[in-house]
Structures are given as C-alpha cells and as structure tokens.
Length: 404
Image (cartoon, rainbow, N blue to C red; front, side, top):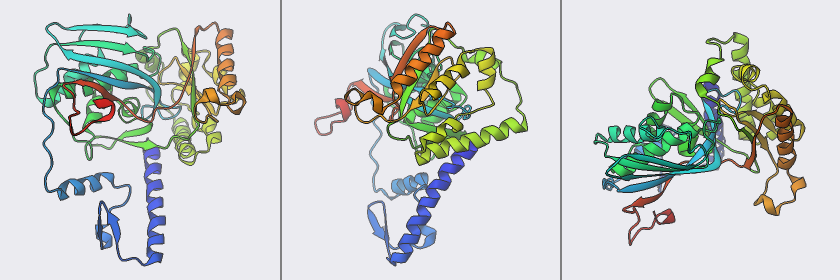
C-alpha cells in the first residue's frame, strides 16, 4: 500500500516539476492560486498534490462560512456501489467501485424493522447486527445525538457475501443515512472523517474507500489516520465477473491464510502492486496481467477454497482478458477487458473481448460443476450518494442534482 501511495505522490510531484520548469522558462512573475493572481516566493507555493493545504488556505481566506445545515431529516435514500477489493496483490489496501448499485431507505418510525428485496434479501440479518444499522448508529454517535427508532428498506443489487463489498456498502450507506437524518456534517479535507468511521468498523479501507469516493482507490493508515488516493481508471475498461451461487465468508477466507509471509512473498507482492498501479496510471492494459499476480492470499484460497480460481483466470486471459483475479475474499472471479467505446450495444462485438472472456469463464465453471451467473459491467466513477431526502435539500433558489 505504501509503495502504491508513494508512486501516486511521485507522479503528482513530477507533473509539478514539469510545470515549474516551463513556468521558469516563461519568466512570468505571477501565477494563480484559487481565484487570485499573486506574486509568490517559493515558500508560498502550494503544489498541485497538496490538496489539504489548499483547502485549509481556502477556508481560512473566506470572510464568512455558511452555517452547516443542521436540520434533522425524516427519511433518506442512499445509493451505494459494489466494490472489488485487493485487485490481486493489493491486500486490504486496493479497491475499485463497480457499476452495480444498491439503494437503502432509512426513515424515522415508531417501531424498528428491516425489510429487503433483491440479492441476498433472505440471507441478510434483520436485526441490529446488520451493518446498515451499525453504520447509522456510528453516525449518530459521531453527532453526539441519541439514535431514534428507525425502519430500513434495502433494494439490493449487490450479490450478498460474494466478494463484491456488500458489507462495506451497508456500512457506508448506513453512515451517510445516519448523518443526514441527524443533520450532522463531517470535515473531509485534512481528516476524511467519513472514511475514518467506515474503516474503523470494517478494519481496512479497500472496500469502504471506493464505496465512498468511487473509482480505484489505494488506502493506507499513516500512523494517525486512514488516508486514500484515487488511481486513474483507463478508459474502455470493462468488468466481467463470474459470481458463484454459494456464499464466501470473509472469516473463512482469512482463516486459510498463514499469520506470516516470507521475504520472497513480500518482495513479490511489493513489486506486483507497484507494477499494477503503474499500469493503471499509464493506461498500459497489457501490464495488468502481471500486476494482479499475488502470493499472499490468492494461491492459498485457490488451493483450499476455490479450486476453479486459477483455471478460470487462465481461461479468461487466454480468451483475451487483460487480467483476472479473485474479487475480495471470493468466491467471485473478476476479469478486466478493454475496447469498450460508448454504449456497448451499439458497438461491434468483435472490437471487444468481453463476450469471449465471459464464455471462457462459464465453460470453466461448468467443468468444475460450479453454478453461478456471469455479469458484465464497468467501474463506477462515483461513490455513494443521497438520491432522495425528506425534507429536501433543494429550495426555490438552489436545486441540487436529481432535485434532492
């Protein structure tokens, strides 16, 4: 995680050095920070990657800051994406938001209840142990307000316990819903408070970070707090996933792993995760195949839990996939393909490889007697967001997206 995070920072710094050299050659006496053009010394320069310092200066420079909207809400609906964690060697630190969404509605009520429809509706807990409820409670605790009696309704399109972040989606949706209901807002720049709450519940940022922010995220704990950065997602990337019919418990998947790794295994994964991040940043999709290789968890899980894993990875790559890997703790196998442009149903199939890769994965599943479904989608650029709230945030003078 530290290597991947460092590569992103180096990439930003290099871009700044190129700009600064060009600036020096032009001999211009000033440059723009925010909306003001000022002459600055080097000591006053804010580099492009210093996002938190720029935000601190922006807030400090404002004459007045509007009051937070502290009005508690009666009900709120939150839309949250699925996520695919690890992406091979990025154990507990890399994750991607997937264009596959669930919606949860939380509203004040006289009696507690949880109802659900869709994926895993009969399997998810219907009591306070549900991560959705845990997320809401964490939000009210953060707001230092008593949690009222609430009722919950889940429209689930994220396969339950299949390695696609259903638990993290529930946590993030619950926290966001709780904050809106409580009328409480959190600081982001310099603290990423929402991430701290979510990762504190989940224990790591690989799923919750992309669920919050969207895209591909790399997250680490810097000794004080969780921090995360977005990794560029190449255009035209498609996600082809085989989702088995059976549940994969994270506790069982972690149970097959050894408590220690060898120096050789550690060095292997450090190199692969650096190669993976570089492939994303450069858009070199051919290198993804090597970047997703791993020795920390996939071989162990493939040997003891998912015998079909590596035969399916090999079949997907032979059929034209850029790469394939075990999504999260499994059992879903995720493959990346390229060549998509615009709406794929208006594009010639032979320009893409998703159809051939999907069939290869299905054939492998059949050979191992594994039943499941094949889903083709893409990465999600945005994370969880409020899609409906009562009373609304929009007013006669200001209308927010979807008239929220």
